[in-house]
Length: 406
Ligand SMILES: Cc1cc2nc3c(=O)[nH]c(=O)nc-3n(C[C@H](O)[C@H](O)[C@H](O)COP(=O)(O)OP(=O)(O)OC[C@H]3O[C@@H](n4cnc5c(N)ncnc54)[C@H](O)[C@@H]3O)c2cc1C
Image (cartoon, rainbow, N blue to C red; front, top):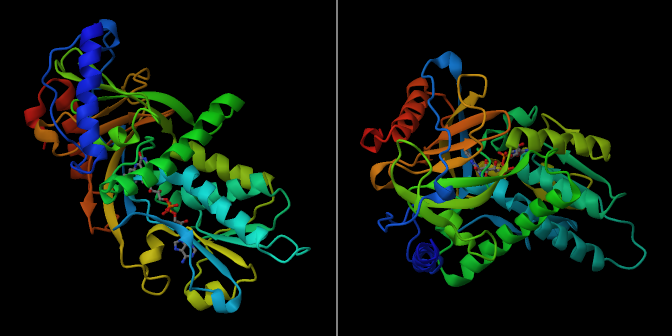
C-alpha cells in the first residue's frame, strides 16, 4: 500500500505538473493504467441506478457566462472616471462561478478598501450599488457588509428572484472547471490558483464557525476514472493530492482516483445569502434591470459593481464580446425517487476516452447528473431526450458499460 501510494503520488505529480505547466488544458488528461490497492481500504460504496421515467427527475438548463481570456475582476479605469464613479467588473466565471465567488469577492473588497483609503480625509463611506443577484453579486454583498456594517449597499437585479439566475442551476462542486482552460501560462495559472485558494479560505472558515450547514457546504470525495485537470490545477497546497487505486464500486471495476473537494449547494447557499442580506439591511431590488451605460452612471452610488454574468455581453449594456454562452443541462433527482440517499460522493468521467463528459454530484436534498458543455449556445429550452440521455449514460457507467456512453 505504501509503495502503491508513493507511486500514485509521483505519477500524479507528473500528470499534475503537465496540467499546471499548461501543456494539457482539456478537462481529462489521461487514463490510469497502473496496478494499485483498492481505494477506501476495499470498502464498496452504494451505486446509483436512476429511474428513467420523467416523473422521477426534472431537467434544468443553465448558460455559463464563459469569458475568453478568463474572468474579469478589476476596476474599470475608463468607464465612469469623468463622472467621478468607480466601476468594478466581476463577471465571466464560466463553469466555476460558485468556486471562485468568495475569492473574487475578496478582491472586490480590496479594491473598495483602496477607493476608501484614497478619499480625502473626513469623507463618509461611499455608497455601493451591486448589479446582479447571482452567486457573484451576493457574495460581493456579503463581503462588503461583513467588512463595513454601516455602509449603504444595495443590489439591483434584472432577475425576479434567485430562481432566474444561472447560479441556482449550478451543480456546486468546488473546482475551477471550464474556465481553467483559459489560464495557460505559469503566471496565469498562479493567479487563478490565488483566487481559488482565497475562496477555499472562506469555505474552511465556515467549518470553523459552524455555519457550513446553513450555507449547504459539505466535504465530498470525487471519484474519477482519469485525473481531472480542473482539480489537479488546485495543487496540494489547496486541495489534498488524490489517492489512486481501485474504484469502490461493485460493477465499475477500474482503477481511478479519489479527490477531496467540497459541495457548495447552490439552492441552499443562494437562499441563505438572500436571507442574510435581508437581515443585514442590504436591499435587493428584484426585476430592476440597468439597461445601459448612461442608466448605470446615473445611479446615485459612487461605487458600482458589475456582477451581471452573461448580461455583460448584452449589446445594450457593457457589450464585452469576449463573454460567450456555454450551455449546460442537468438532471435533478430528489432523494425520494428511488435513489440511495447515502451516496454522499461525487463522480466524474467514466466514458471511454473521457468524452462525453459525465458527472454526478450528490447534494443535500438531491443528486444532479450533468455532462454537457455547448459552446456559443444560449438556448435555455430543456430537451427531455437530452436529460434522459444524461441519466442513461450514468447508469451505464455504473453497471460497468462505458462503451454505452452516448
Ligand atoms: C449546468 C451548470 C453546472 C455548473 N456547475 C458548477 C459547479 O459545479 N461549480 C461551479 O463553481 N460553477 C458551476 N457552474 C457555473 C456557475 O453557475 C456560474 O459561473 C455562476 O452561476 C455565474 O454567476 P453570476 O453571478 O456571474 O451569474 P448569474 O447567476 O447569471 O447572475 C447574473 C445576475 O445579473 C443579473 N443581470 C444581468 N444583466 C443585468 C442588468 N443589465 N442589470 C441588472 N441585473 C442584471 C441577472 O438577472 C442575474 O441576477 C455551473 C453552471 C451550469 C450552467
